[in-house]
Length: 598
Image (cartoon, rainbow, N blue to C red; front, side):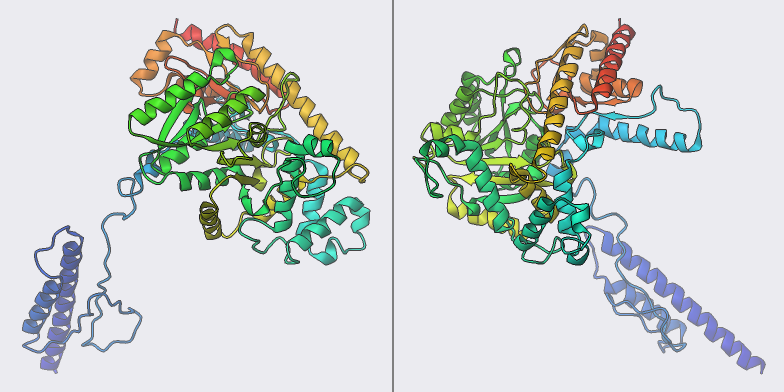
């Protein structure tokens, strides 16, 4: 009996030793696998363990080592002579790191949601936590005023009623929406009628199904009609003809050349993707510019070719500067193939004259540049001495469209204007004079994303084709838009006049868009402190403004500016009362900031 117990103990001990040796072998295998150069095949370690196990068991191997690459379930039933060993490769380090990832993505910057905004979000979270716990706040304010981004509804603008009514009906199932017996009691008749038309345009599938990759044909035709009326309505009216074909030289749009997009941003990214064939390709962008262009060009590995706007001339365009910029870039071997125009301007708020737009389309035609016309603020023109004049109309007036001598892509969005529906991500781009083969490749790219979001498509349809005179909702819809426009106009004046009254500030009048871009004189001590900390001086200033007042702006350095200039971009979207408070707080902060460095 004693001998049997000893044999059992010896067998158990041997089995344990076998397991230990096999675990050591597997550990060696993992270490060998993670090494950049292996001196022996991975099976060597397993063979060593098996040999050792054989010696311990007196020549008979009593354990089964799992083949490399096969995982044995630990919950399986094994006999005492079958011991599973897990040999799955377990890396010691992460495969995707900042060093191994795309460096163009890592180094690209998007200032509108950059360091200052991240700091603002952190403070906002602290304020909310303190409010919930009813503890005393360490900040001299109770909320963040986000003037860093053109997000109208995010700072209090109410949505337009009629578009939301139509969108709600389009989203609802038929029986509780357009076909409900209660619909007429809840919604105006023109909203119900339009929702039914939208449902039909979506093929009866509702808003939850994919659409055509360029957007529903009905919606794209509406966009063409909108552009035709905007740019050539006077020409068509003068002809007195009702023919839908070309009327007295009036250019008709082609729905096949319209792509509905997730805001203007995704359209811009698509075109830059097509333009930047390699690292030698350059895109002319204004300085200052909206950071989506610099960020996307960096992401795709292209070259930014800046041309400076003239601040002293109300951020005007100088043709000599355009020629200089292009010549310098080409002398450096950059293949400049495109030109970005933002009109009305972001971040500068200027509205360019007809002559300036005509000069630009001619410049692009002369130098073989694809013109990217960012026209998302076309409804935001406040200066009565100016008006929006599209690049398409300028190309027509200069004869370039008729001669097929211009390559133009224009962008529009539901995020700006008077809709302000940023979260809907609705927008479109129209191609004019673009090679059909390239258009086919853009369609392929759009198809790879399946389609833009359907609520955004619907909102775009409602933006370009609203209620008509005589419709039930026409007067109320126009009244709501007018009220928003007039308030924006007043806020632009409050912001511009208010900042210009602060010693050390210089701000051009906001003729349009939603922003002002003041120049700020900073004390030398602040500039030196920023240099010591490796940050831009206006970033230091913006962080100070945030921590002192709760106002979140974007440092001007994030948009590009002349050497030695400092400032920031701010929207004037908060309410008129809030904007007045913002101006007072900015004055107080600037005085205190300067006094700290005297």
